[in-house]
Length: 217
Image 1 (cartoon, rainbow, N blue to C red):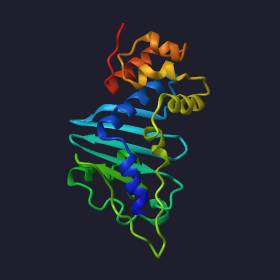
Image 2: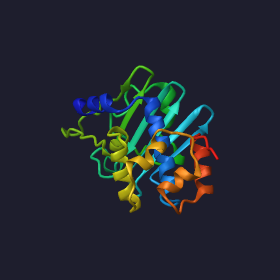
Image 3: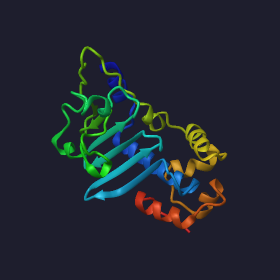
Image 4: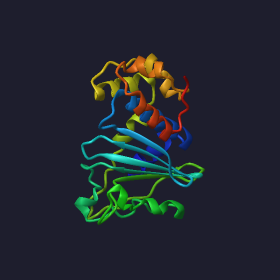
C-alpha cells in the first residue's frame, strides 16, 4: 500500500503544474465540444479557492481543491476496493494526517457526498510535498488503491493528450494544434478553429473566463 501511494506522491506534478494542466484540459474540452465535458476548472470556486474536476461520465471522477498554499486531491473510482459503498463509509486511514484547512473538502454535499464521502484515493500537498494517509486492512484484506483517473495529468505530453482527447471526442487531434492550449497561451478564435472548425466560440469564451485564460483578438 505504502509503495503505491508513495510512488503516486513522487509522480504527481506539483500544485502549480497540476493546476495549469487541468486548466488546459478544461479549455481543450470546451473547444472540442459543449456537452459531457470530461474536464472543468473554476478559478473562483470560493474566496481564494480554485477547483479542477475530472468526470468520465461512467461513475469515476476526481476533484482538486487549490486552497492558498495547500492542495487536496480526492478521487472516486466506482470499482475500487476502497469504495465507501462497499464498506459503508470512508476507508479507515485514507485521510489520516490531512491538514485541518483541507478537512472541509472531505465531505461536501454539493459534490454528491450524502451518507459518507465518495473518496477512494486521497492526496494532499501542504506546501512541502505530496502526502497521503495510511489505509488500514479491513478483516485482513489489504486495500488496493487505484490512481488511473489521474493518468492524463501525470503522463503529460501533447501527443498523449491529443490521443486521449481525440479518442474521447472522436476527432483527429494533432499535437501541434493543441500545443498552444497546453502551453496556456492567450487564446484566439483562430487557434480554437484550427482544433475544431465548428467550435462554439461564445461557449469557449465563457469557459476561458472560468479557467482564467486570457483571450486575444
